[in-house]
Length: 287
Image (cartoon, rainbow, N blue to C red):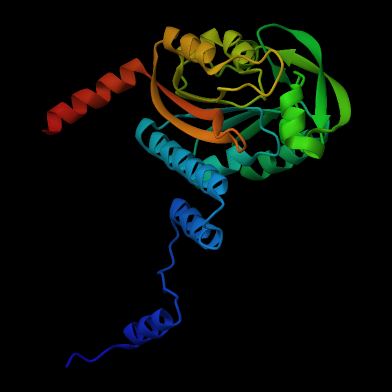
């Protein structure tokens, strides 16, 4: 009879009480997966939470893959909020320069503190668009909804108190090309562009033609059922990016209408055509 070691004994005892011992890991994606396991297993009927959580995890995993395989030098974070995306990018392996844009005055200081600690991260207090102008920013109770566009009646009904307006600010809008040129980042840099501006993505892209020519990948939050009045639909964003020589590289559903079981938003990844060609050639060579 095989002698059981202490680990086997502990696993057997835990199994008798309905538990499983899982080895610890330093991998950030696996850690998130284990956290989701603990969260979702106690809510087996909360299907919307399952869909949303797993799609976000898949999107983050795909982002890590693109960082590893494309090796971008500059990450442009448009709509930085409190720096959630930049912090996640660092955890997922991005080691280059981060350039963040966040016009909310109440969040700019928080971002500057994070950037100073990072040492390779700069923050600008501008909104981005297709031209220089000043616009009114509506700040909502959940400030991740804050936008220069107005929420639709349907969105207000759906999100309730989360989207009550708590303040408004006049913000300065610039084009991405203008800022990147002034900072000498639009020449020779391998750029990864992320834009999440609550409905203003199309104007961001229209003001970024030169930057897009140096970008190797793009991530945009695209609306299938827009929450904001005047927001561009996914199809419009897709047309612009395909026109700049990008191909679709991943689509992950991140927002759902629970009552109608319909899709609201997607994380849409794009990669430059030439990078796809190089990857295909490398694959053919290795066969």
